[in-house]
Length: 341
Image (cartoon, rainbow, N blue to C red; front, side):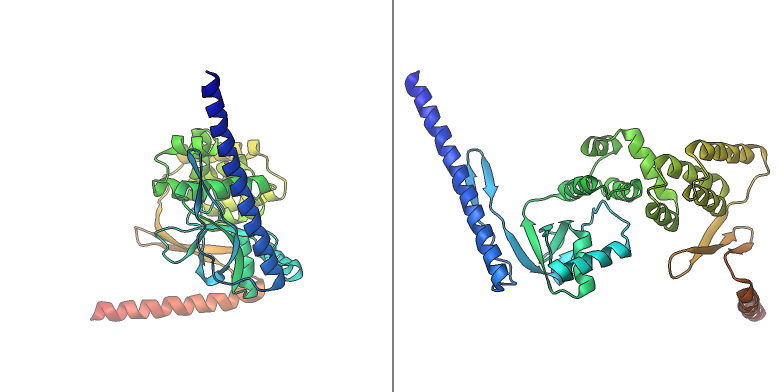
């Protein structure tokens, strides 16, 4: 028995020595890279992939920060964030100019993107680098990450920074399920630590127009899931203009979740007892260059078309009316010509 224990102790000691050796080599590699970077001699080309080091039953892959071409970096197809502020990107670019890139981006290689590096974490940093016209960016290259890892690593990183919103989650979770990265909401819920009912309610927000989701994300401090979900119900039952009204009320601090619930219920009741609405077949939405909604054109199956615009200054209304009239008259004359033919 003593001999057996002695043999086991030697095996464990050997495994521990392998781990120490691997750690020492990793530290040496980091020291060399940092020294080369500070001296300005680091090669812009990525070094050869490090050899795996066997330690017990696991394989430890050594990796170090390297410079990779910005043009070879592609966004995470399962990026948990969908909404980015231009101001924060500009601030990060200024930080790069003042003190350089402090934290490397995390990337991996995927067969679907040959010759390119796929971002796991660092979308804001790559956007800042591109805005500056940088040719290279510091990156930590990890091998062997699958689609679930692409999402989960970035998801947890954003949660720790409090950057993630339910509006980002809505778009990301829908794509994960659409692409069958997770088979259903139950499996996705287990992965992100959320109840499937919560997952369902968040994904329901994707039925809102992108401009409404964008505006909610920009005002995430005032708008939680309870607000957003009830605005979604109001949108479904009363349309965009009513939903926009209530969204503005929330932003101004004039509407609680309970008040939105009452409004959504009232719209549902009006829908049940009121005249049947004719649903449009399609619509075209108009936005200003800064993303603010201007209105929409609804097209109905019975041949009607309704144009609704808002926020037009009085001095511009007559000019707009003349242009719309000219477009409609031109279209009408073309219809007459085609009918005659």
